[in-house]
Length: 287
Figure 1 (spheres, rainbow, N blue to C red):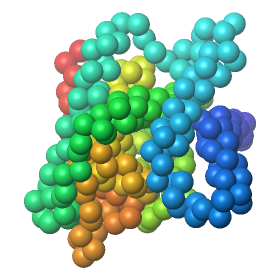
Figure 2: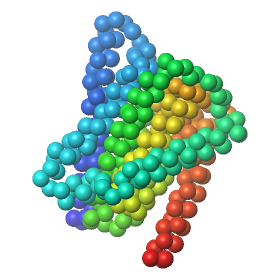
Figure 3: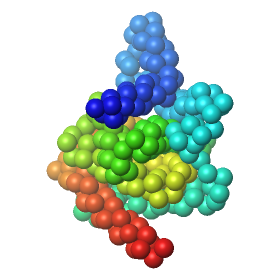
């Protein structure tokens, strides 16, 4: 009974941590409300403002700063909730980022092959500064979500329950973090759950967040600004390509939610998770 209470407590605390990430969004929402009331401008105009999107994404930096301040006197606790090993950190980050780019590009390419998207080139040199800012913004945002789910929640749960249970709970939490996003479907929730299972397994293998944080950041950056696909229901980020979904190809494009809501992504993640578990088991037996 005490274990169940502790699990619920950590889930609630993880949920509260997401509000720290969302502080810039609250200010932006307040600003949008004032702007709309004062000018009569439709909010949808402001919602397409790239600068406001970037500010929201960069709000992710507030979470690690908060945890560093909270646990500055207790390094052992900090290593549980925000594990960042100094060993091979650059190589882990580069590997994770590369895998995120390649996996997302693979799924998108398969979708395009089956006419899931209609592609338009929208790049101009005037987009270069925005591209860099989105790169940084998704770097903070992707890592922050991993700190909450695979760092704080999974780290805490692994101390009181089995590793597989901790991974499943953190993956469910990650999935339902996006439950109110535009275009959410059951398929999207399953896909997000599998994303969480995959990153949870990698976190347990590497014992830190460098690889999974980089993977998550690359996944979102490649989806939105580079390929012009909706990122978990958030659209209007296309800077290089714009991928408009084909209405009758939802299995391949995920509809309004984007590639993460597609049946194709679910299948790919099942394959990738199976492969990672197989390799991990082989390595364990070898050792």
